[in-house]
Image 1 (tube, helix red, strand yellow):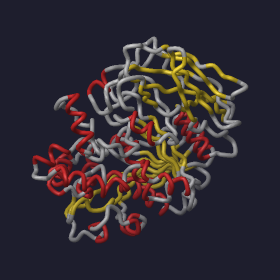
Image 2 (image 1 turned 180 degrees about the vertical axis):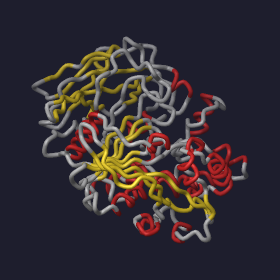
Image 3 (image 1 turned 90 degrees about the vertical axis):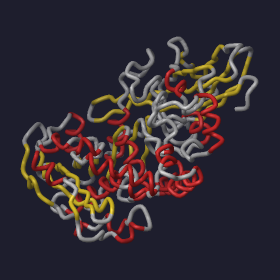
Length: 474
C-alpha cells in the first residue's frame, strides 16, 4: 500500500490548468476530458476468476487541482465481464486504499450485475486523513473558513469531482465499456451526499441511492437567523459537528471566528445551494429521467430536518427506517429488518425489462376524529403495495436539536394499517395524548421485487408529517 500512498501524495504542479473553475464550482468540459487524467496504471487489465469471471484494472487519476498548484489524485478500480464490454456501471466511493489494491471478489449482488453485463467502478470518497492526506484536509478546512469558496472544501469540490472523473476514466477504456451506458451510484453519509451532488452536474449519471445524507434546503441549512435563533433558544449552544450544517459538518462558527459574518454565511448558502441540493434540481433531474431513492433515517445528525422536508418535498421518494441514523444501532422493534431497497433499486435501474418498478411516493391526509387521528395513505392505481404500518411521536423536539436525535419513537407507538378496498387507501386511527401539542407520523409500505428467482422486500414511506393538535402553529 505504500506505493499507492506515494502516488496519491499531494503534488505541486506548474499551473492550475482548469482556469474556468476559478469562477464556478465545476468546469464540466474539463471534468469530461480524458487527456487531463494523467493516468498511472498500477494493475493493467487482467482476468480474475470466480463464480462470475471478470477483467479488472487499477489506476490512479488526476482529479484536478484542489487549489492553485496542488494536484489531487485518487485511485479507480474498474471491473467488467470477462468476455464482453460492460454496458453501464455501478459507481461507488465507499472504499479504502487497501481494499482497492486487491482484486475485487464479487458479492452475490455484484455477480448479478456483472452477469447481466453491468460493470463496477470503485473510487475513494473518504475523510482525507484515511487516504494519507490529512495535512491537505486540514489546510483545506482552514482555507475554506477564511474564503467561503466551495472549491476550497473537500465535500463541495474534491469528492464529487472524484466521482465524475472516475466516469471519465472508465469511458476512456473504450475496449471495455460501451459508451453511453447507465451510471448508477449508491452509498451512505459522505457517499450518499457526494453522488447526490454530483448527479446534479453530470448528465452521464442516471441514478442515485443515498442514505443518511442531505436532501433538501431547509432554513437551518440556509443559515436563516430566525431558524437558528429558535433552535438555540430551545437547545442552547450545543456541540455537534453536523446538526444545522449546510451540506455536511457545520462550519458556521469556524467561519465566524475567521472573520466572516452571518451575512457572508447566508450569501454562501444562497449562491451554493443550487449546486448541492437535490430538492432544488428536481425539474431537471426528472426531465433526465434520473432514478432516485433516499434513506435519511428518522434520527440522523446529517438528515436532521425531516419535518421541514416532509412538509415541502412530499414527492421525493424516501424510506424512513424507524429510529435509524448515524449511531442509532438498535432501531425500532418493528423496523423492517429484511428490507433490500438498494439491491432492488439498482436491479430495476439496470434491468428495467426484467424487474418491476418500486413503489412511488404515496399521498397522505389526516383529520382528528373522536379523540383520535385518522390517517389515510393512497398510492396510484396499480402500484402494487402489499402492506402498511404507521409510526408516531408526540411533541418531538424541533429539527436540528439534540432532543430530535435522542428522543426515540416509543416501542408501543406503531400499528399495522388496514386497507380499504373501496376507497383504495391504507388507514389507521392513532389514539391522541390529550396533553400533546403536535404529533409526528409516517407510514411504510412493502412491495416484493423479484429477479432471477430471488425475492427482494422493498419499502417506501409516506411523507413525514408534523400535525398541530393544539396551541401551536404548524
